[in-house]
Length: 213
Image (cartoon, rainbow, N blue to C red; front, side, top):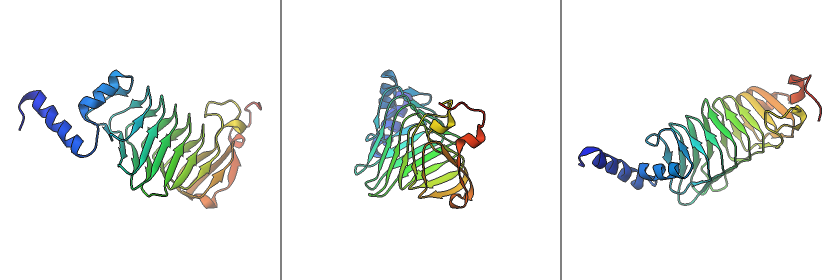
């Protein structure tokens, strides 16, 4: 058993090394190169995760990737507390840049060899969504709520600040299971349990006074 702060940290780092995770020391090195880590002791990041620059990891973020899988993040993403990303058993998770993930928790999971979760740029995933299977979340798309999105394809567009809702990325909001849904730019489904039973609407229906660009 080590003594003092150095011994305690060495033991903590050794446990992470055995689990294939970056050590606290290595996470602090990431911070020195532009990654914002609010609590390096609670963030768990696999050595195999590829991180871009300027990402922000809040406490409790977990990024796991085994030796058979791929997990990549671009630049300037914000991962809030409770965000969990898993690439295992040959699965692939690719996340673009400028995304807001996990306000209220979020899970992205590719844990089969045929699973691939792709997230574009400037998306917003909040309120506890889970994205699994072969899913494409295009630029500017939003998943808001406790939604299990299984093998969905959401067309990209502008983000939630875009003035014309017809030009925004597709949106899933509500709660329940969304399996195999395909949405085009400017569309939204507000689900309550089974998203297949909910209508596909235009986002403009919720913003009738918005400009048309």
